[in-house]
Amino acid sequence: MGSNRTYFRTRDRLSGDCVPPRQRSAAGLMTALADAYERGWQPADVMHVTRRALGAGTAPTAAAAVLFQARAAGSDGRAPRDWRAQLARIADSEPDAAQFAAGLPRRCDPDDFAAALETAGWRIGVREWVDLTVLWLEFPRLNQLCEPPSAWPLVRVHHHDRPSEETADPKVLGRIRGLLAKAEATDFVEEAETFTAKAQDLMTRYSISTAILHGTGPASTAVQSRRMHLDSPYVREKVHLLTAIGEANRVRTVWFDRFAIATVVGSPVDLEQVDLLFTSLLVQATRAMHAAGAHDQAAPSRSASFRKAFLFGFAVRIGQRLKEADSRATAEAAVDADVRIDDLLPVLAARSAAVDAEFDRLFPTTRASRSRNVDADGWHAGRSAADDASLSPDKRAIPR
Image: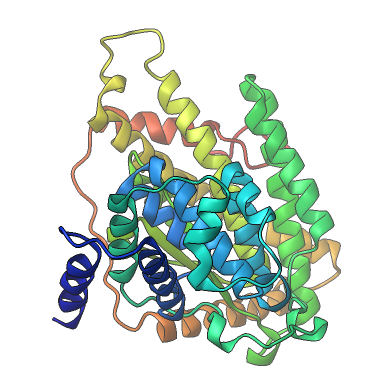
């Protein structure tokens, strides 16, 4: 009930015949954003839900507010690493907002947001102020994945911002991203499979070598969480793919259906692997799904039910194949590291146990989603496409 009262008070204050000064509206917007951060939201979450709820046309103004708040809060010297990375991505995706933020002074007062917009020639209607403010005030509480701005140090000293020892090597990630980018750019299926296979092999071996290096026990297992934002269409089917990839890599997934946000929990290295694999395999699945009906305008593959079933079948089969590939690569990595497989399995089991414990702490009350009846043709076509998505460097597909 308290949330609803806030909602109506906000609308009464910001809309109607007696519109308050623009400065007051801007201050209310900044307050709504700051409060959302204190309830567990992060810049990328705010932008994702704003686009879904209000449309892409509101994104530049939302980005301007996010980047203004970041300057006012001194985020460049105080925010955690991932927070700053999110702000950089927002600036890259919204160049007008980035240009606006670049012209701001080092010290900003949140109350001066409207004045800064007017100086930059930025026109915002009252309706847009209201919609953004109401939306952000109504954000529910999310799990805190990092400290909110109120808990940031005055100056973030380097050792406070140092990544954990298990953070993936940027050089390795760069090689993986390069391989996957080539796989996504080519129109030749076999070439894409070769690049994807090389990336998968590199990721798996690196993950296993990291596990061997850091040993067993709770103290040696770093567990982190991150949010992933999924776009329409077929969001539920994309979640199935993300979950299947995560389960094959000791990563747990929980889905917030209302906002199309998934939270993944795992070791830093495994989270990077899941993120990269999901991005690449979603490209492959989408390409195969569209190709299924490219030569026949009346084909059932052009229907929504077929495409949903296609993606679902792809997700189920790719999860099975990833688990098979993980078992094989684990054995090969153990041989390369001169470690007995019986000594390695307890290390991996300890990592999984640590992930489970953190997941249960963050999400003590979750329920499994139920599968629904799906189009049979789409299901089988998706499974077939998953079999063609190469994960092994020495074979086109894992034997069925």
